[in-house]
Amino acid sequence: MATLTIRNLPDHVKDRLRVRAAHNGRSMEAEARMILEESLVEPGTVDLSWVEAFIEIGRTYGPVDLPVPPREVEPAWTFDEP
Image (cartoon, helix red, strand yellow):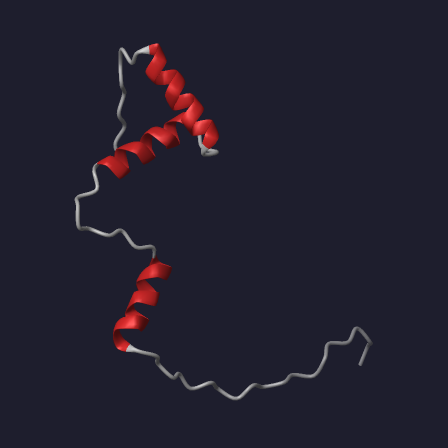
């Protein structure tokens, strides 16, 4: 990952970033990263999490029935000596 240093940031901007980060439960660095990521997303693109992508595949192709293997029950553990 790249590192970015921002110099000469006005105090009022830094203060607003600090307040916004605290409101969202993030560090100032994480909040600045989120602001940059959100502002640079191209219109019409969707960034899905793997769960959302999996759900979307299910909606597109329908449900899938997977075989459930038979369950093997093992005897309970015991600490008795043999």
